[in-house]
Length: 93
Length: 500
Image (cartoon, rainbow over all chains, first blue to last red; front, side, top):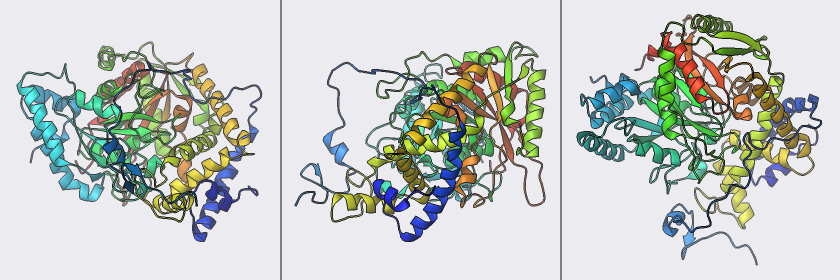
């Protein structure tokens, strides 16, 4: 798979890789992509895609307020929090 | 020493019901067995003995008040969980470093259902990181070993689930199956494992890997026990929009019909897929399959050849769809709301560093593969095409089920392999799931049942083998009935691993 650029795809996936990881994963993924390319042999003309084995459409619930996860429980696993909010690095200058 | 840990679920509930033992004693027998053997097996990552004891005491109060197992079918039974299911107040790591010191703020629906049925729910069982693997070797924390041979893997991804039941630590455990992660380790550890039909069991509280494939199911020592637990955890749940509002049959009643007479499977037609019978099969697996087929015929079943023409494309289809869905599902592990974080100068750098440090190699491999097959310019060639081939694979099964009640396959191409044997070759590891992945793609149900052992060889003890039955969508009743009749006519399920 000559057009597979591990560095670019890892960036899209937001995963920082070391150069050694890039090399190893790149080779392994090349082998895997070579294997999955066999799907090109299958004639899929006119075949519908299956997203779920049992397609259910318009699954709704009654529009009634329920009991949400309490605020404190939702924040309890935060790596950084302040004033009842999640803290992240600054986004705008 | 108490032998309570060696009992099946049915035997244990019998004793509890007759008040011959207490739930606290049953739990203690489990904990004692964990102390005795889990230093070697390493199935459990952690467990909260105090919380479990409080549940067992509550079960004993229920039993003293006259509550029966007809009302609460798992009353007083220890049940352990794969580390992918939320259990309120307990750690949840998915055997990954990225979740840090996460504790689940709520119970998964299956945990609620188990508790409502009286089970003593405890423990975090080791697994492949985020359920990605076939040997439990991708766990970031520990290596679980096969109780039949401690130099071998227990299978995966639910390796801790299979090993804990196979070594008598618990009579029942609950795992998840995306491409074989219940059935494959069940086969390699010599226990029963069930993947219910997609939509049968609510996935609320299951950390998502591939949402269109994931399904929760039990491990147990017998088909009867597995059928009972499947019934307990099944049913519609409005919190999982893919759960299907279909009544849950009485699976145990279905087994009764199988117990009658010497030809309990008269009228049943079983299919052998010709595409699964060509080459590469381990001779001992092949011999066990042939013996099983002969047994099914003795039991009255008719065994015929069926065709699943797209079988050869199942692995390639799976290794596009599952990583694609995983890349989307695992985007939530970004260092913002929970788990570990590695700081960075902006959110994107913080995300990338957190994920680079927090995920192991297999998870990175699959997220990157999934990101690639979904990326602009490649979506149609990979993902959309795979979804179309998936339609053809499902159609193959539905066509086969027009003439047979279930399909018979080996669960795995060989017995348990050695630790490290395939861990450096992801493609070889992926191909060890060849018989189990179609079931998830087609959304049907499947079960693995012990079907014999390899012959002992110099330096290698005998190793368990599994037989897989694939059933129609929502065909669990018939699948259990066939599996139960087979099991009851064989000695394999009565064998306990040397560590039990």
